[in-house]
Each structure stands twice: as C-alpha cells, then as structure tokens.
Image (tube, rainbow, N blue to C red):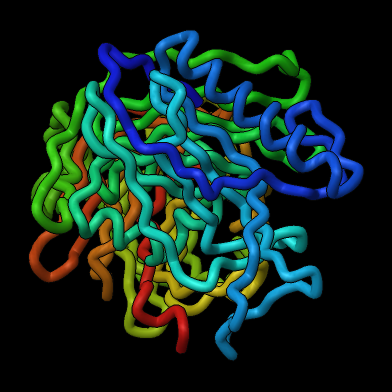
Length: 427
C-alpha cells in the first residue's frame, strides 16, 4: 500500500524494530536459523525503505515482528519458552525512507503463529500531504480497541491491511469496508490479499462520499489490479466525528412516514420465522407482496421496512427482512444489533440467510431500526458484488437509523444496518 507524497520531512527511526524469525518464506527470503536474522532484518527493511525513498512514497507493509518479553513479565502476560513474542505487524516508511510507525495487531483471528500484545496499541503517523492516519489490521475493524478509540480521538483516515474471507450476506470484504467508512465518517484505504481458495479478495479506497474498489472473482487474472484515486483530506475533530450519513443525491423516496405509490402499500402482519444467517439465529419475515410495509423483531429490537419492487420480467426471487440482537459466538465473539434486507438463495424460506452473489430484482426501500448503540454501519450490495452508495442515511438523537435508496443499478443482494454493541462484548 503506497501513498504519493508531495514533500518529505524528517522523522525519527524506530531502532527497536526486528523482523520475524518464522521459519518460512517472507518477502522472498527464507529464514532457517538464528544466524539468518541480521540478513533478514537488513534485506526486508532495506527493500521497503528503498522503495519508499526511491519513488517518493509513503509505504505501509504487513509482516511479522519478533520482540523480547520483559525480564519480569506480569502475571497477566504470556511469553513463549524462547522468551520472545511474535506480533502481526504493520510498518510505515516515509518518503525519505524512514521507519515512522509500527503497529502490533490486537485482535487475532486464528493466528497461532502470533501473540496478542500485552497492551492495546493506538498508533498513528503524520504525513505532509494528508495529515494523520491511523493503523488497523483485519479483524481489528470489528472491535472497539483500537478502532473506535482512534475514531473517538478524531482520526479521519485509516490504513487497513487485511486477509479477509468474504462472508456473505453481511460481511463481504468490500461491503464492510464501505460500511465502516460510511458509519464512522472516515476514509479507509484497504488492501486485502488475493487467495481464491480461502475466498480472500476485495480491496478499495473509501471516503464517506466515494468508493474506488476491485473485487476479484473466480477466474479473474491473478495479478489483480492497481487502484489509483485522488481523495479529499478529511479534517480532524477534537473528539469522535459523527457521520451525517447523507449522500449528495436525494431521491425524495420515502423521506416521510408515507410514500406515494400507484396504490397504497399494505402493512403486512409479521409472520416471522427463524433462520440462520452468518451462524446467528435471525428473525425473518418474507416480502410476499411487490410493495408494502413490514416489521420484524428479535426480542425488543425491531426493524421496519417500506419497499417497492420494480417490475421484473420473469423474476421469482424471494426476499426477507431480518433482525438479530445478540452475541455472535462463531469464529469470534462480539455483540450485534442488525437489520438486513436479503435475497434468499431459493424459493423456500429456509434458504433465507444463505450466501447469494447474484440478483435480478431491484427494490426501492426505506430500512430503519432503533439501535442500542451509536455505532451502526450501513451497506448496500448489488448483484455481482457491486457496491451502491445509499442515497440517504440518517441517525437521530434516539439512535434511530434510517437508510433510504432507490434507482438501483442492478438487483439487490443485501441492504444492511450493522450495529455493534461494543459495550456488551465481554458480557
């Protein structure tokens, strides 16, 4: 991940940096023994430093970092028998080749080779061309520390190396990258690895107003794609920056409690059912009409939908409105409140919540929920894993979040309001 710098400045080097001793290939260098450490350290750091300096770029790389444990470790910290920690690490080089920042990933995801740092690191670095950036890695983006801490400290621009497995229908790579940018009102520069076997694809550059991204699919060229964009510099705030959630376009659709349809929509009594989505038991209600109003609840948490399906020739696709309020416990533990309009995989209700990539049905909608958190991340995913920018998203003082969209370019796969109840993660 690189950034073009217009000028350069002097930064202190981080002399304590040490690359990983993992016995595997990293950056084309094979590490076999302790004797290889000096060579590895020099070659990796020199190569990154020279790239940044030679091309007048800021460069961010993800790699391993071997650090000695304290001589007298605390009872709460763990250390391997060889007396070292190994961290999943982001390093940053400035345009003059200086190592200006290092971040050790906090929230690991099945990373047996790495250790959790004893304290959460809140790491930023300054640039002469775009101000301050915060550092995150992969699974971090779903958690309060360090992500929300950085946002609440006014950081508006983030660097995000990741090895993210696409998880439809709610956590596809580009889907949540876009959702985080919108929900936190920040710029996110995200770089995912490409591993088709592990379903790891999707990178992009996201501001609250625009999205430049590439989502490789099976059969696409393996070399990937270089993304280039000119992005605005977002001004920092003294504290947390609240998202206005509103786009420049305003369709006028469903802005009020009632909408003008050719015939008045019916409020359909909710006949809800439970189906698993993302390993969580969602309460669903089917969209059985071409237009209408629906509500579905999971306990006291309720989601409302006002919708109109556009005429389709032979479409028999089934859609459902889902709600979930609880703690996700599979491959990670975190508390959620989610409202989601999804295309079901088949014509049976039991298929609602399964993975779907394609859709033909275009839907104008107003999706709304009253959340127990101010951290809500909105997203719209269209057929073929294409992002759509919501035409209007707003949040009031009662944490009622409303997302409105119409005139879709393609069929709707998912529309989601993904609320994170950080305060309940440890309960």
